[in-house]
Amino acid sequence: MIQQITPFKTQKVLDLCSGIGGFTLGHLISGGFETIAFCEINQYCQQVLNLRFPHIPIISDIHDITVESLCRVGVKEIDGIIAGLPCPPFSLAGKRQASKDSRNLFGEFFRIICEIRPDWAIVENVPGLLTAEGSEFFRAVLWEFASLGFDVEWGIVSAVSVGAVHKRERVWIIAHSQSPRRGTSWSQYTQSGTNLASVGGGDNAHTNQNRCQQQLQETNLMRQKPLLRGGQHFKSFSFDFAQDKSQSTFCQRHHGLSQRLGRYLMGQSDLDRWLCAATVPSFSRLTRREVAALPADSQKEYCQLYAEYQSLRRQHKQQLMALGNAIVPQCAALIFDRLKQILSQ
Image 1 (cartoon, rainbow, N blue to C red):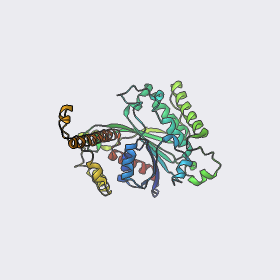
Image 2 (image 1 turned 180 degrees about the horizontal axis):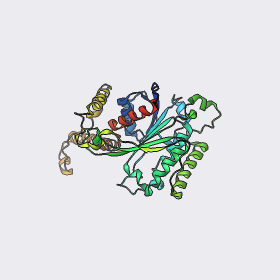
Image 3 (image 1 turned 120 degrees about the vertical axis):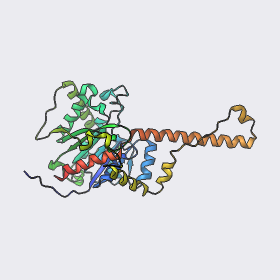
Image 4 (image 1 turned 90 degrees about the vertical axis):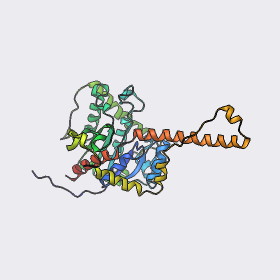
């Protein structure tokens, strides 16, 4: 049977838990996608997003994401959702409380899917997601996607695979559906009598969230394999170079991803100043006795310089944290390339 390839139209994307924009940078490498709204609560990351993408609105709190709040910032149609959900609930470096951790946002993520009804979604997280709560949490995530009518693919991609010098393995989940109800336009949803929740979350938002959270918890308690409906299927994916990580470098097969991303970043005004700001200058600290021995004017100047130095150190710490949590854009580009193959068939 020959699969028919259909023209790929530009996909409008909602980027949740955006960080410093690594997910969106990934689809800029791949092409064919357009981020129309970010959701990010960290103020430093918001500054980076505003610098890189000044024309894309940012909604701070994921709990405020509704059809109504998106319309208020000019977003009237969404084809897909991308989300780098917080990893501490599943990280091997933490307590791994998963569903019991207040930072677990999978329930909120599924609430948004229930309300927006996208055609597809991509989720990124740490490999610990696969084994959290004896693998029952991930089983519940698959169950929820299936209950919403999605086919699901997942796999682990390492930054080494795209030529980086660090391993940084991450789980990527691609959920997609060809269901007609997901092809319905945004305007039809907003005009069909949908009970829109308020920007603050509202009763409807909390009802959907509680329902999704309850389903996740019930599936965990049942401890059984999710039932798949109507042709929905789960499968893992892999890439050709996964078995040859040692020879995968930018100067070889993946140099194109790096070059395309570099050209985009360097084309952004004022970004070079921001990148250079990551360097913290050295500062010779004086003891209290040495400061007291300085003339009055020099004391005032020293205190001012020291305050500026401390400010730079705080900014540098925020930068390191943002980079530590960031998605590798070249890895995301591979996932978007796979999604384009799926959507074009």
